[in-house]
Image (cartoon, rainbow, N blue to C red; front, side, top):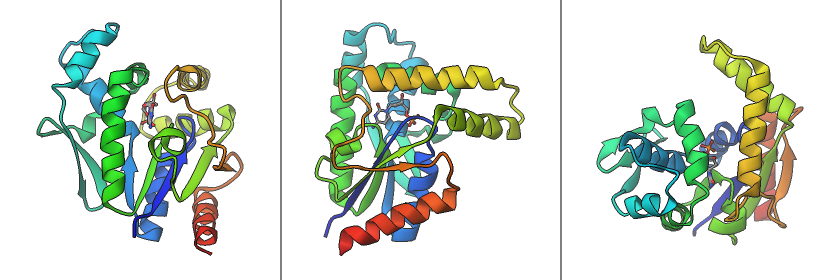
Length: 222
Ligand code: DC
């Protein structure tokens, strides 16, 4: 029988880390929808498409074929036959992703792919509009949040550990800007679905959040 868990929330709330761990614990397939928006952004960027021209981006969407595969349980994004997964976390790609994610043609294409993937196995899917738009009938809906301050601290730690020189004030501004863009766009803005359970991870460890979501899953079965 199919099963779908939707995890939505703002950038940096820990959705992908948590969703991956929850999927492993519960034997579900993890689907990262942000990676799909990033893949579209990567295509536009590497083909020199003017992302200020929404009609052109829409037309170019017809040239894009995205296939999702798994290597040792890790999601791989295959764009027109090429595995581009290693390029998707670049800051430039992330910024452009939030621009293309506002466009109707991009969302229509990716939502169709996401619904198809969800119908094929028992899944945990994370994103911004999974509980509100992609899978409104998901069995479990989580809205994973954390304060801007906490998200900025986590991102700063992650980057400095990688040896990246950065300023926490700039990171905080970037997070606020991305929240604004995600929450205020016309199509499928980020918001908590009415039937989603809010999990605020600001003062929780990763393991505590995973345990909390797994217990919500168990309760949903009873
Ligand atoms: O979660 P992420 O940072 O990988 O997402 C990249 C961008 O895609 C981000 O600006 C929000 C957008 N996105 C979206 O609009 N809808 C989704 N379901 C997933 C991501």
